[in-house]
Image 1 (cartoon, rainbow, N blue to C red):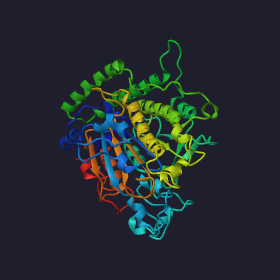
Image 2 (image 1 turned 30 degrees about the vertical axis):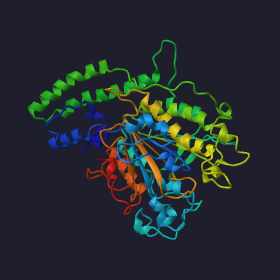
Image 3 (image 1 turned 180 degrees about the vertical axis):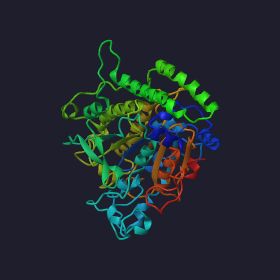
Image 4 (image 1 turned 45 degrees about the vertical axis):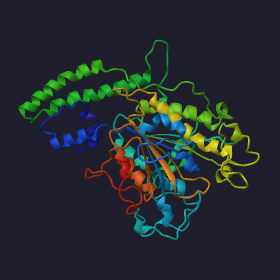
Length: 476
């Protein structure tokens, strides 16, 4: 069995198993050693409207490059990033109804078209695509899940308290929804991810057992610690049954190992990375958040999500900025223009608003700066040996539905993957000409160590028969 599936399927039993010759194939041991350090979780960060590609993408390809003027804030994470630019969202080009927004958000991370674009038996294969179909506003349901969901299913383990952590960030006049459905992320064709926009609601959902008292230990930390001890207890008790029928040499190894389990329980150190975010304004409704900008919401939601990841609440997390026609950035140079022009029109550089208008540049830079702040939040939480952090142990990816936002077209997309695993060409920028966004999605599967039923890394994601293989330069 493969390591991750054995661990999940055995309910954590293998945490305490020594190397027994009866069960361990030397070839499998070598394969695990070669795999090295793999991510513990996947985190997706998405926003609509694209960017100004020439100002965002790195200055050169390969390993000798710098971030562009819009993305300079990401410089501290350059060596833990992989960037690919000039990718096409090619699945949209298979149909004639190439609309602006409808279809682009839904396809970019699912790698497939809307359900109404499929005939035949409706299965997710290129042979079933109807070329004359259109991603209409009223059928924006992709024909499969988004990539982070597939990775999360692979990474899921018994100690996770939730399947995912899904937070949204929205600020616009008159808006006060507690939740909304994502247009980027899907667990299946019929199941868009529900995003929690209300910080207090998100906090209560993720840290409901955290109550601080004078002189009392943090109940959430104790609960997590007990969960891990119970796994070790289960291993210890299972040894009695497991040793039956083993060769004498393996029984001796197992018995010696069992004697150490109780001491491991007694010496189990505190979970240093698990804490909870403070200064979350309490509010049953939106009264405490009236007038908040996306900048203010970002600060709180970032802290909630990063700490949830440090506590290993879930194998998947999502951050989704939404409703971007007239968002309140918290940047006066943009927000004060709304009596003259919407952000949408600034993105298009229409009605006489210049492509190099300073407010337009500030808006596009905002998302790169927020992504950098989120990475810094993850990087501030220690996790594991050798100074590693939650960021180091995560696979974080960043992208939008367009490349150049002004054109609202399917080409020139720019994506990033961040982390610090032993898999991947970190510190690399690749020109993706000739490749599709689906190749990037397949690359993410490889970076996460996902394997198919045959034990191999999957060679396609999304629309079957459309794009084969990962991006080679990112896996060198």
